[in-house]
Image 1 (tube, rainbow, N blue to C red):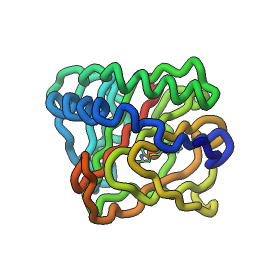
Image 2: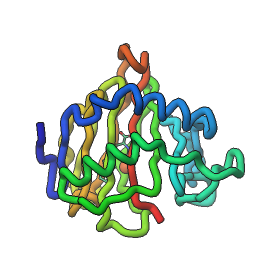
Image 3: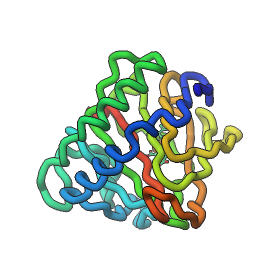
Image 4: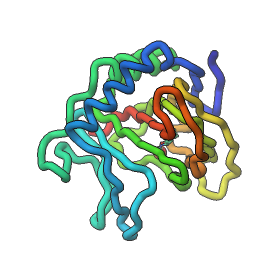
Length: 203
Ligand code: MD3
Ligand code: FE
């Protein structure tokens, strides 16, 4: 099942289902080395989403700003390697959406507990916006908000469910987006949590 969400944004419903267990095992392996943490934004607010990263670079925020770092500031060590199953799914999904050369160097892993949210933002900390971002949703469903190139553009709501993959390329790569407060629920593989993987060409 393939659906257009916007110019260059392709939703592949259920594309990650065949590797759901390997993906969740990969998250656990990464988190064993680089634990989930609630980072603080430059404005001083603690994020309700817990995050970690793997790959050549990880996304960090603190009082000094937002950026990619080659080492985890919590340990000083390089981020854990990207599990093979992560890179394979990201590359195959990007190719299906028309980006055969995509090779992610960073994967940000977001963990939502009930009440966690991500306010409307653009992803602009990467070096080259001609490369897409690939997102993978696991566990509890969320309501995703997708706007346009300007913050004031109208937003549409989509439910992103366990196993859904979205490739964000073209103009959509820079569109505003966010996630509404996660509702309580129970998922057979993740319990009361939602995970989101975002694959990026950061460096
Ligand atoms: C549209 N994550 O990590 S995934 C993020 O569900 C982020 O955790 C959300 O926004 C989450 O930055 C949304 C869908 C998504 C990811 C990246 C995008 C949509 C995007 C980048 C550009 C445009
Ligand atoms: Fe984002």
